Image (tube, rainbow over all chains, first blue to last red; front, top):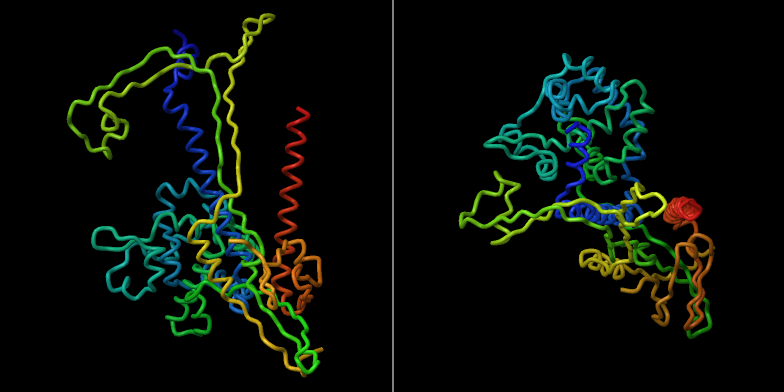
Amino acid sequence: MSDNVYLKKEIQQLDLYQLISGPMTALIEAECQAAQATAEFIERVGFTWGNLEPKIDITEFAKYLKAIQTEQTTAFLKRCYKLKEISENKYINKLSEEQKKFFEKKKNIYEFKEVFTIEEYNNLKLEDKTNYLEKKDDKYELREDKYEKILNAILKDDNDEKDIEKNFHLNPLLTNYEKRRLWALIENINNSNGKDNKKEIIVESFGLMRMVSFYYDRFDEFGNSRRFKVEVPLLSLIPIPVIQVKTAELEFNFKMTHKEEKKFDGKLKDTNDNKDDESYLNLKRTKLYGFIAKSNYNQQDPSFDDKKIKLKITLEQADMPDGINQLLNITSKVYKSTEVKSEEKK
Amino acid sequence: MSKGLDCPVCGFKIQLTIDMLVKRDSIFCSSCGLKLTMDKEASKETINVLKEFDKEFKNIENKKNSIMNNYKTN
């Protein structure tokens, strides 16, 4: 049997369970993305950082990053760059050529902070601990997923401040909230080095609600016109897009070639070690194997290979999750109506 | 939970859309007729964010429509 024929046979004979679970997994991922989009919408549209918004000083931030990249060795760099490991292990493969060159250039300059002692850990802020570090044995290490996000966001190009600024803002891997956390982390380190601590407040809250102001005039009992101002949170005014999958129809013709019966032997195995072993699910489990069959038989051309899988997804506006409902209840209570004094009227 | 602004005089829920907030200067309560004028200066930043969002939303709608049209013609 030639390789080609063998391969074709392998592909055609699919496990029905996997055939169905593939699209289902994709659907779940789609739902996750929809939920993230909703969260992003609430954060971006509903909240503001006003004068505390890190974006205002982003040029300064870019300069700061450039400075620490070229001159200083800071705790932030020790935490985030982890150059030695990056240049030697799997991370290097994920970086662009430019990034690789950058690491090569820098790896002799900085020391690497891979592990934190208990004392160092205790000196960190709570959210830094939970978001950037994880416990391994008795020590704390920087979370791997955070490395990639931070690195990709900041270190894409070290030549130009504008590029750093652009990457920081536009990198889709960082949400606004993470950008602020990162900003706050840097500020925190900066402050602990005895520098200005005016931006310390940034990490402590989620921001301010964006408000819409209206005013209206009313006459009092003496016939005098009085002006009132109403301030309403924007989130309580506009519909929040919460989308979910309503139905999903998966349609294909399946021709079964053989089945496999598995019987439970009475011993429960450790599923971590035996991920493929599903005997614990059912006492008598049958697996079906086959291939996608032709959906139409073409009389004019019998060799015509028309195999189709149809996936039809219907989305709908979902009910608000409880958490968001609570948030909206709070926003509807933040309702200010105050009288505008005559000298304030225009 | 229905969205909108509770009329400060009669309590009627005034339904609003992003378009209304972005384009109109005033809104009226359908129940008591109260005229609410938007304070453009105080709400400037909020309206700018909404405009930006509205623009993005319309871009996505256009893209979606062009994809759907291509799909239909094919």
